[in-house]
Length: 283
Picture 1: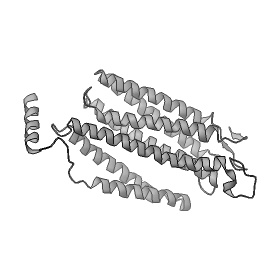
Picture 2: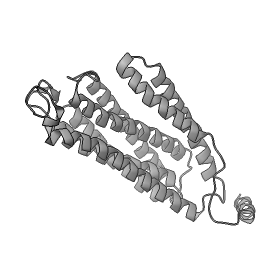
Picture 3: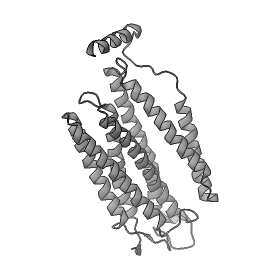
Picture 4: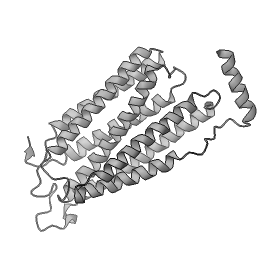
């Protein structure tokens, strides 16, 4: 087995005159872009017409694209001689830059929120310039939001446990930690779904506060969905023994992304749920 592996690597090395891995043309980026466009359009259609068809089509397309794209990347990563050291370094830089772009993505939401938080007179209403606006009953930060916070913080410890177990070559605890993290991610999503369905202010036609609240927390929820899918893929790969202490960048990328999601939620909890709570809160 070892000799055949080295033979395949030697053949690739003989045909590729550089240490980089140049991917072959793929249709999956286009499919992903179309699915993202359908999701964005579907959200708008749901808000205005309460029609979920476009949103469902976009979501199905996104999940299908993730499946086939991840499948190709996994096959590529397990092909001897393709993901050399310099390729792995490039992927790490790419993931770090992607997370940096996601940070700026959420900065725009916080900027919008604090624009009205510190200058409520910009709303231009006939009522007193206060934030939250008069008549808005906010969600109790120490109810479901606190439960979700504890859930995500715990998931950060379980994914770290799984990572350390993987580095030590303990695949059994790696699988356990990943499984617990996926379950905690699903628990968070269930809590947010319950919170949205019992929100004291509407998803649409609610004014500035609901718009700022739902766009920030909703996009975070979307990132939790993506992160949970990412970790689920890693869970199945770990169950098949595809990660080693030396080669597990797919796991590392998922862990980085999940920690990013945790940190963003802490800012959301403090800034929007706690600092932005009204005098009268929902029980």
